[in-house]
Image (tube, rainbow, N blue to C red; front, side, top):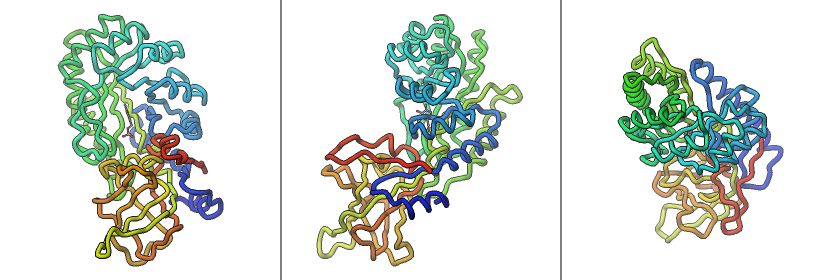
Length: 376
Ligand SMILES: *Cc1c(COP(=O)(O)O)cnc(C)c1O
């Protein structure tokens, strides 16, 4: 918790639930990544937190942007981003949206299939394109699975086809999975990419860029290595597989730039037990899966949770949201404990909630308002 957030929570005390974001933390995280990975161009993954307050700060710092939709493109351009610094990184795009991006000046696009490549050739002629390869996402707390990417041999053929279609086969991308805790994953991914670079070299195509995606962490319940260790792992993988002829490097951090910058404050609405002999208290909050805490799905992301009664004796709890939907349980199996003195009306704080919260919040499920955000 930063001093600015602490002061905001004590002095302003808006009605819950809300998230408060300290922009200085976003700036520090951006500068730390630049310091530890000076060879990589940073493309902020806008979906992690699309607040104009954050995107404009990153424009000022010189960041580039990874976007997935028309609205994300508009957002970046409206706060002053140069379209030359925007990458349309979604592999699933409508042709009309590609044409829209092209018209706005976007010239860098992702693909992972032949059908997408054909759309790009028609709607974004001559653009730089990069092919996303499939990763297993082992070690990631929020894996991205087989939905994205293709096998290396298919990527090779598609990059050759890109050239034949008049596009500029520019590079290769991957995402090792979000909140990746296994530093060895980058070596596997960069190794596959380097193989692809040589295969294309033999076909007369010189790729120029490797897009190393996201996966860098925020700090939740378990400790994670510091960002310099991630940077070391990335650079070690790069020199291991590319030697002295490193291609241009792009990274697309989302979670690691904004996650630690936010604190979500909620209120206890109800505390109950399911039977006389039950030791587990059910603690129902005014925030849940539908109002910002979607990443608790399958109890995947385990936030640190604090109250003003920390230090008192604790007992086991199940934590749930306020809606009339049974999936709106945050934690039942993850072993959370809360103070036995906890009372209805107490405030509860979820730490490191600057990423993937406001943008996941439903607009009106059960009549509950979307999660509010404040910036300090
Ligand atoms: C979501 C996403 C990211 C950001 O991932 P983090 O793990 O949050 O850093 C980066 N690149 C792409 C293509 C994404 O979809």
